[in-house]
Image 1: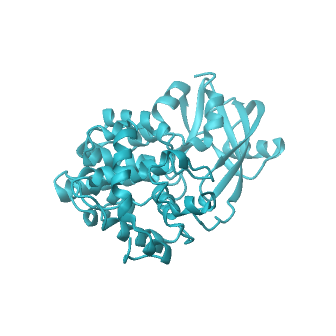
Image 2 (image 1 turned 30 degrees about the vertical axis):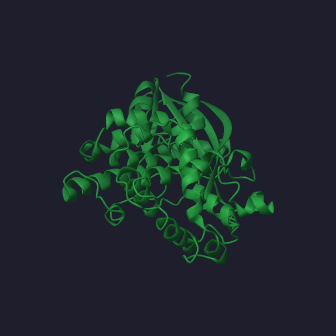
Image 3 (image 1 turned 135 degrees about the vertical axis):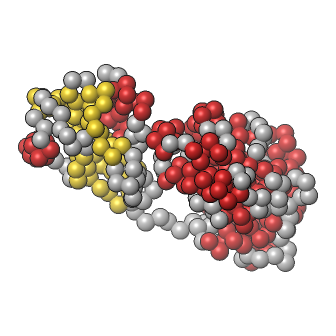
Length: 359
């Protein structure tokens, strides 16, 4: 916006011109999504936390199930952690679920069960940052509070043909200030969602924007200059660290062994199959089993598996062990109970799928 904050490109771009064409486009093209029906503060909050790092289509069934099982803030504050994590199973980033419960407890204790009505108040709750606070405040409360995520940064970067690094916190802060000044009265929620929607469905990442379908193509400087596929600029991420693990599927009498991960750190407090660092040979695996007090009756090497976290990759070797006994060091559960009652993270998905043959 002219005269606003930000880099030179953003200052020269009159962002106020995007408001009406974007709202008109959104009214006609908005996707039908379950959280857009009855956008209460609670529903907006849960959907936005679920949508972090997760595709929309994957979130839909999780959101609908979550609303059936945990329909409001008080129910979330009271839900047992085990049930919450089981409902979250497959979404990943389980710390988000734990933060939801902590925030719900704070809302019940400090705000009478109602989410704060300001972005500043929302940001005080565990797990709610600038983006989520802006989404709740604008969509649920109709306040002129921007929700700046990767989609919105990409749209703004291309509109202004900005070469600023969108991973910079300063760029996010400057864009929020620019957008806050152009919010249309009475249409804050629609404007927030129109920016998100344009980035999610038209101004796509990976050098593939659908400019012919964009309502802002005539205003877009990157499109005018033919550089839309070169934007936005984002500093490369450092290479992910690789960790090698050997995972054991221990079976005895139709029961499988699980253990709980530590309460802090990666996948904190979730259930996992017994594992040790490194890529173990059969002989080395036998030594580990002996240390656990497990007597193997038969062993089978499983296909290798890999799981990618944000900054880390697990490269896993697996063994299926039919044991003669159960070790007291683990929880042993029948397979239907494992899938019904225990939240095992998708990092172990390859081994979970292997066990589903017998469930």
